[in-house]
Amino acid sequence: MDEGLSEAVAEGFQQQTQGRVRVTVGESGTGGGFRKFCRGEIHISGASRPIRTSEMASCAAAGIQYVEIPVAFDGLTVVVNPSNPIRSMTVAELRRIWEPAAQGRVTNYRQVNSSFPDMAMQLYGAGSASGTFDYFTEAVNGTARASRTDYTPTEDDNVTVQGVASNAGGLGYFGLAYYEENRSRLRGLAIDNGNGPVEPSAANVVNGTYAPLSRPIFIYVNAAALRRPQVAQFVQHYVNNAGASATRVGYVPLPASAYATYLQRAQRRQVGTAFGGRQAIGITIEQLLARRLVM
Image (cartoon, rainbow, N blue to C red):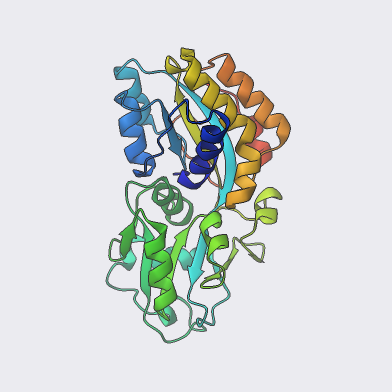
């Protein structure tokens, strides 16, 4: 999910409205957020992946229509302990570590690549309710949610930071924003998708070279709730301030013209998704902006 971005935007909104409109930002992972959203328990759901077909069906069954608003880009970052001599990995090497068949079998870096150190791996990653888990497993293993399970799963990126920072053989993954906050304690691996190693950075997310681990993040807004002035006011504030807030918390902002387009989408309550219930692995910002809504 995008709690960091949403918290930053909500804090600015509370200051602007002097607390007259109360906004609560909760943590439940993208899947948990969509479950609440499609039950009508919350008006806005942050998401680190597009809405799934099953979630679209749940919302439809409950009579809930939604406005899909991309708010920033992120680059999933694979991190290791700074003492680890590995500087980069290919996507195929990541697959050897994380695929279901690796469970209980691939436990040492030397098993992944003979040039890697003879060192036991300690793995940390996103919990199964997380959109980060969905995206990473599909980008690396080819199927969403297909993963070894003998790792430390968590919805709290601090657990991954602590685990990798305190174990020489630690390896984990999370969003670029969290890596930027913890650069002094971790090393982000360059990822080689066939065109040479590419460092995790905002610039490489923008130029499209950090594939397949770059992704858009979203908010989904209950279309009926947008008729309420307070909700419309907050969503307008969110879209108008998402770019500056994204930069501040370590995400990659969209072009100003994109935010103008998405604000218009919210104001007109244009419902639907541009993803048809599926991920778009390695999509660039330009490709995102070219997508059109479908019901």
